[in-house]
Figure (cartoon, rainbow, N blue to C red):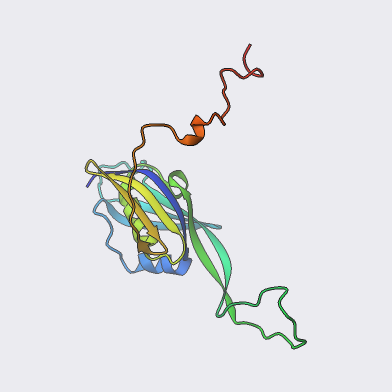
Length: 188
């Protein structure tokens, strides 16, 4: 299977534990990927593809997913809002815990890096997105000559389409941009 990733934007957030469990349960990986290497450097999680094709040089950087890791306090019930009524009673502590989240946020170059095995690694990201309860993944990809739009919102596949537009957007027609050729501060 051949493919390319043209556009990608992600705002996915998953508990780090869910991401680790996903890979520990031996998910069905695309045929081009033999294995996955997971590395954590401080607050960065790197999920790197190991090529099944042995002719691919060991010095060729394969595609990797990059996520920032953040800690968030998760409450068992909704915490009280500051500034709410204080009835003179001692406030009861709401049970909570600190949870580490893997945040796949950004565009293609930020989230999905390197070109070797980029499309198969996108398929892995798409599977991860289907497990996320928060965030979206949108992409335009090409598989065997056909363009495909992907949109996953909070773990659910949603309808998506690609629109090809011949004319520039309205904002550039309005003349709101800078005309660099006739700029008195630059020319002369």
